[in-house]
Every structure is written in C-alpha cells, then in structure tokens.
Image 1 (cartoon, rainbow, N blue to C red):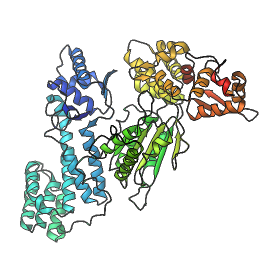
Image 2: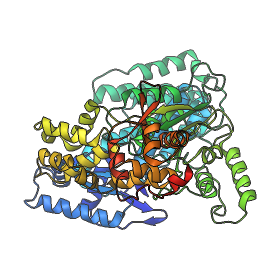
Image 3: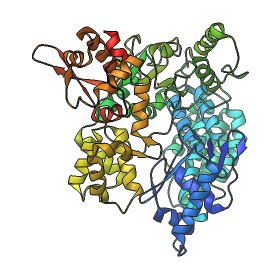
Image 4: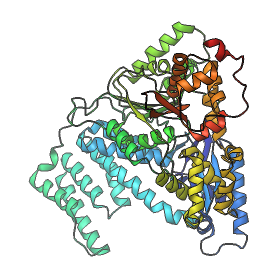
Length: 615
C-alpha cells in the first residue's frame, strides 16, 4: 500500500489507484496520515473539514467518511475508533511525506560530512516525490494549516540540493534555475546568495553584485531590514574573490543518491503510543549506533537478538529502535517476518526473493521457481552480493531457529542485524541477546493510561491496578484490555476488572480486533515438539506456583533427568520461566500466568501417554 500527499492525495495498491471521491474523504485520509499513527479527535477532524461552522450532523458524516475509507482501503489498513476520535495505522505502507522527511535527513547528514555527490542524489530523490502542489484535493481548512510547512520543507530541501551542486562545481546549469527561484522567492536570502556564487563562478561578477543590490532594496522595501548573514557573506566573498573555491568533497562509500529508486524502507510504522522500555530502547540504540572513529565511516558489526515470551513486545521494541536509528542507515531498512500467521516457518527462498526485490533486483519471482538446494544457494549468493558494503539495518522478525537467520546475514560489517524470536537461539554467532521481560506495575499502568485515556484509568485506580495485575505485565494483554475499554466508553474500568478476575473468562476477554492473547500464546505451544507440548499442557492445570524437575518426574513417571531436559527446552522456547534455585540447589520453574491459562485448555491426562513411554 502506498499513500501520496505531496500532490493530490492518493492511495495506491501497487499500480492500482484506489478510487476515493470528494475533498472530504481525501481530507480525512490526509489528516489521519499526517497524524503519524496518533489519534485524531472528532473535534480536530470537524475543524479541518468544515472550519468554524460544522453541520449539526458532523459526527454522522465523519463516521460515513471513515466507513468509506475502511471499505476502500481494505484489511491492510487498520482504521479504528479510539477515543476521542480515530486512528489509522498501516504496517508496511509507504507514505511519501515520511519518505521525503527521511531522505531530507539523510541528505543533510551527507552534506555535513562533505559527501556532496551522495547528498545531491538523495535530495533529488526527495524532491522527486513531489507530484505538484501538496494536498491539492483537500478542503481549504486543511490546506491552510498544513500546506505552508510542507512547502517550506520542500524549499529548504531545494536550497540544500543547490548547495550540494555548487560544491560539485555545477554552477553553469544552476544559473537559470536559480534566476527562476529568486524571482519566485525574492525574500529568501540563501537562494539569492547561491545565485551570486553561481554567477561569479561563471565569470559574471557584475551580475552577481547586481543580484545583491536588488536583494538589499527588496528587503528594505518589503520588510524594512538589511541583508542577513548569508547574503552579506556572499557579497563579501564575491568582492574578495573567494566564491570560486568549492569545498573539497569527502570520499564516500556506497552512494544512495546514485540509485534511481528510493532506498528500501520496509520497517512498519513505529507504535504511536509506545510506552516504557526506556532502558531496553537505550541499549538497542547504543548497540545499533555507529561507533566513533571506525575506519569505515563509523560502521562495525552490530547484531542483536531480542527474545522473550510471545506478546511481550519484541517486535514493537525492535521497530521503535529501528526508527530511532534510521538516519544511521542511508541504504535502507529491511524487514521481513520469518513465520506465517499460523506460526509455520516461511520458505527461505521466498524470504530471500522478497528481500532481493526490495534491494532492487528484478526478474522472475524466485519463490515460485524450482531448483531446490541449488536454487537456494544461488539466492543466498545474490543476497550477499546485494548487501555487501551497504549500510543497511535488517530486521528479521519472529525467527524460528538460527538456521533461518544464518542464510539472511550480510557478509560485511556495514549492515546491522536485529532479530526477534521467542526462542533463545544460542547458536547465533556474534549476537548480543536482550531478554525482554514482562512489564512492571508502573509501566503496565502507563501503557493502559496511554491507550485508554487518563479519564478512564486515573479515576478508578483500584480497577486499573486489578486490570494490570490480571494482564501480568504482558503488553499484548494490556493493549487488548485498553482497546476493549476504548471501544466501550460506557463501561467503567471496574467492570472489565471484574471480568478479568475470573480465570475462566480472562483469556476470552483479552481478545479484541487483531489482538488475541490466546491465539498468540497457543501458536507458541503448537510449534513445540509433541512431547514438550504435551508436557506443558499437562502441567498447566495443576502448577500454579513454582515447581522442580523432581516434582514433575514424580507426577509424570519420567526420569528426573528427562523431566529436567524437557523443562529446560520449554524455558528455551519461552513457555516456562526460571524462578530461582531451591534449598537443594535444584532449578525451580513456573508458568507466566497467561501462558498457564492458555496451556491449561483442553488436554489429555498423562496416564498411558507418550510421556510415560519416554522414560
């Protein structure tokens, strides 16, 4: 899915333009996209649709526009009611405004580091996203609010691109362009100063000085001010003959500006209400950031594994970290899930094909071609060739095992790799592991408040504490509970707290929209080997506290060594947690309470089962 705002507001599904009718619908879409995942209130939507004179039926009309957008945009776009308004999220969608801002940041960084060729190319890619005047088919109320800052951003990027071209001694083709820009923006002193520099380098000193005097007169007549620093510095440089010396460019590595297409940005949007995890996020940012003084522009081998139980927020944290360090990776951010929705591992050839296409490779879809092991080896070679020497961040989400990850590792240290998995993946070489634990009480309450609103949480502190306790610090459960409250504004928090207090109802209550605690946790259980899955489901109904391998062996008929080995595998698979050591030095284990409730569903007794035969 692709959204365009830098021109007429459009939504596109691949090459197909999605039909949207009327300035009001386009306005609602634009407002929600410009909110960058934040909730937009009904009042704000009304103001941007009708100004200060909304109709009496404004709420009904807004609901109609939202319904039309849901129908047209389809299931790939999450457009939900969240008090006091609406929220739009579209995982994996491209939004031209965000691409423009990202490229502008990359270009400025390259310009500061005197990588002028790269900077000029990146700025051109950014400006190429504009398809005419931005927001050209929305209401005048929205255009009045948003258009000035968008146009200012465009002009500023244009000035930076001209600066890069001047440093590359491209002054002759710049002169006619700059003459037109100065006529269009007579009060922008930087453009006038750049025109003076270009004219001087073309041997037109008198014209350069004339541009300065015309600018001084215009500023005095229009604003009553004298020329500022940029214009005065350009004037002095022309008089002293210093305008003819562009700065020496710094040798660059791989240039993202030379590519005809934008660098890939596959990472989903950051969570708008991301809360907590400050320490973990800081650790990831420090690990992924470039190290000062490195001989290759500060890049070194950076590989991180985020592990923890299902629903603990591994992907959300990884995505947040990726956005926080995006400017470190001018060649793009790759993202791919390594499992299907049902938990089955994806075919490695299909994953490599997806990444190769994102990296610009064209041709037949390798995921549907035959070839077996020989084809897979060829795909791995092509992938490593494409990623070698490129400053990429590669996010491999929900990895089933280390073998799937190994095939997707780049061959050089220029790229960073961030892996999420509920398994510990001990065989991954060179990876630092961050174990993500369930949230504490304070973080849990902060997340509930952020999503459900202070008016729902702070007025019922005891109910809020009970909801947080029932969710046991699991962000997936907390979000489901907060969404259930937000979708039912007439419910007091105490009602949800009472329903969650009943273990028989709790898991069913923690399901709303795409958030489903049972589905997420049960998917992990179903991925286990049969003997481990059977043991987990047999233990869950009776083990509400901590337990040892000796106790499990006694109850199941397994040998203690076999029981301990199986329990350790369940810990590695994030089904059980370690809970310390008993007085005899034996490890103690426990279930997370929500995992226990899911595992304690329909199960078979141990008598006569495969577990007894395994001993």
